[in-house]
Image (cartoon, rainbow, N blue to C red; front, side, top):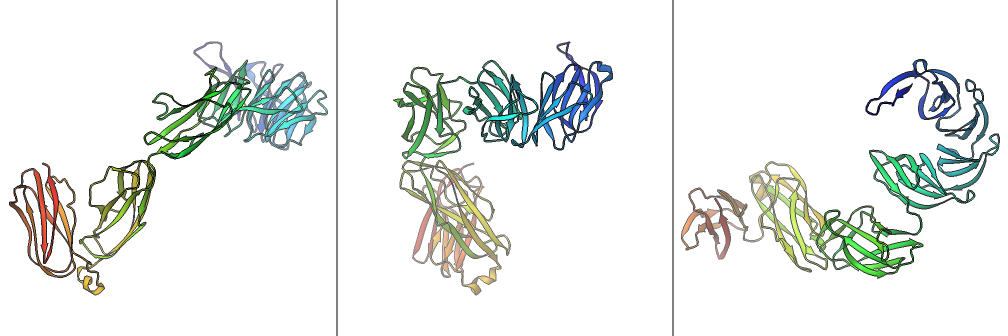
Length: 510
């Protein structure tokens, strides 16, 4: 892998001054005199002479048994962090580094920062090592990290750790024998690099770059909701929070469509630590967040890291399976299911979809269902071939989504009587689509053969279209209404079969 030196003296131009190939993959660099020390996997510690950028060259190396990822220099010693822990090198002769000591109790380490007689290591945990005697480093304190620490920066009594998927961690190092985490921020990306200038922290976070500030004590922390939870209107939803040194009461606020709407107060002047049950109100939303803030200092606050969902009403479908059996090819059979609102608020029905076109919906949607109410939905099955069909019908609503399964198979028309799949009763189904532009389909069931009349009438009771008039065999049938020569308006289709008479309304819109 190449090592390069670039000229940064011109603000708007970067020019490469020199480059040199070296073995392994370098992960970090530190400067010592006119040398650059590289931490490399499959290469160990590599020493590059950079005194003359035009003639950069490898001056020395020390090949370690395992990968190293971080390096820092203090005095004549280089300290590296790697898979085998801490390696300490004497750099008095840079062309020939000497391994002074190796501390392996820590295991998988990724980087190291130095201050005085202490080294601060991150990787599988956070470790403080006494390096007063470089030949005999000793671990003096440790604390766990939730992720894998990749980098560490020091400021005052704080260590800031870039902790991979677990974001930024703040460690109190005032007592080296007992370091402890006192704050964190769950970032959006993967945290690999960190730098600190006074109380401001700069974090390389995968595809994101973030600037943070640890405000110190006191602190408020919202525990739930913190993103991904679901709440239902008119049901209790628990909000929990803790505080460190926040003596005043707190206010709890809601943003119902974060970040597009304002924060609204939910509770005021409640205890600075505890939990409270919120009886959920408002409309359906996927972008809700809670904020908790001090009554006396609104800057002392914490907000949900992610959105939670408010569902309005609760949806249930019954039955969960519609079995249509065998249906003649290009014929129609209808069954129905019920949408039930099992929640404590009005349910808004948004839409429904079938993943197999042979199954369609006949009736118009009921846009709202009051609590405890139900609505019938008719589903038609019209096979186009002698195949087995398996579909999932999903209903989307303010209470979430719910699905049922539809099964059926196509038959040859003359197989109908062989299987005995005759309708059990007379039935006239709503037109589809309705309203319609030019053509619509009307389906009807006959449990036995006989004389059938199916006519379309206008609002004055005049016959507009004769669809069927004569003998029709038992079974499921469908006919097409051609409204080309009809005026826009309301019509009625009337089916007469024996003593059965039924009417359905149609709306023609051109």
